[in-house]
Image 1 (cartoon, rainbow, N blue to C red):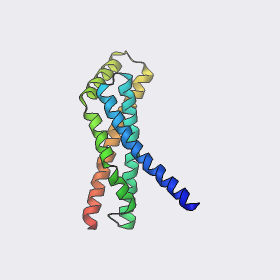
Image 2: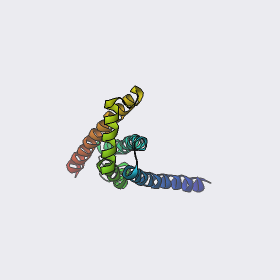
Image 3: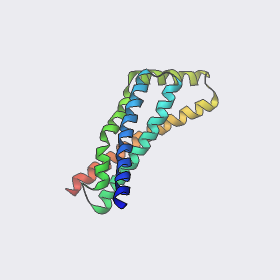
Image 4: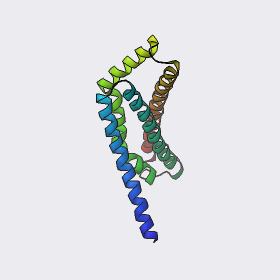
Length: 150
């Protein structure tokens, strides 16, 4: 019974990771073709995905600091998600995404969007910038620790 439970849990973990990778591909497709509110939805989901990936990076950092293990379980998990992280960065450099975000910002500035939407969009943009800064900092910290633990 324990083996069966273990197999089920492992299957769920693996399928969850595969879903995350597929999800990011879906976001790339939406960022290439989306307009207006679809782009806002993509931005929101990208922010959530960055938050998720940061949590894996923080787990790796803790493992490096506490256990002093370069190839530990948490860092291996983070490493396995690097392709997904690079897909998230692609979204924000997608020309259609940038063009549509610029239109949205102009709509906010001109008053075509409600104050509630304006606040939501501003928060999303601030959060996105903050998540990128955090991710860059975590990468820098992980690299430093790995280099100094060798």
